[in-house]
Length: 139
Image 1 (tube, rainbow, N blue to C red):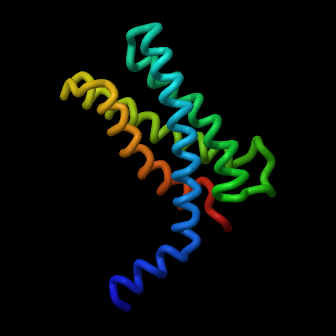
Image 2: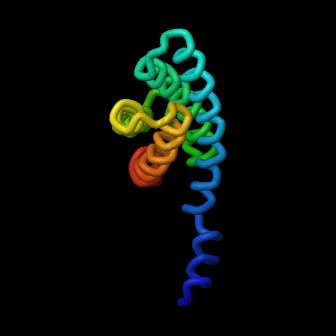
């Protein structure tokens, strides 16, 4: 199979469709996260409090949209083992986001908007991978 054929097969795959839905959901989550982050950062001048508040609001939105649209998990109740897995994945991703926030803001001293965009890019890939392979995996 040539590289072009592999690319076409991937674009038609269920994983690709899920990633596109995940990315659309992620844009919405990022807007929620970024809006809350910006407001809290403006109010407190503390990027860690802002990151926590923004991330929390984003994951609530993420769970609701991802379970009903991206990964279509209707059988499990809202409060289920799936929610626990989702929270574990997002706990890992949150830890990564806090470490990346420190790295880009405090250590590298990047502008906060650039730092935030880098954090979002890194955590999106990690979160999708863990969500797809574990939290929302079909049995």
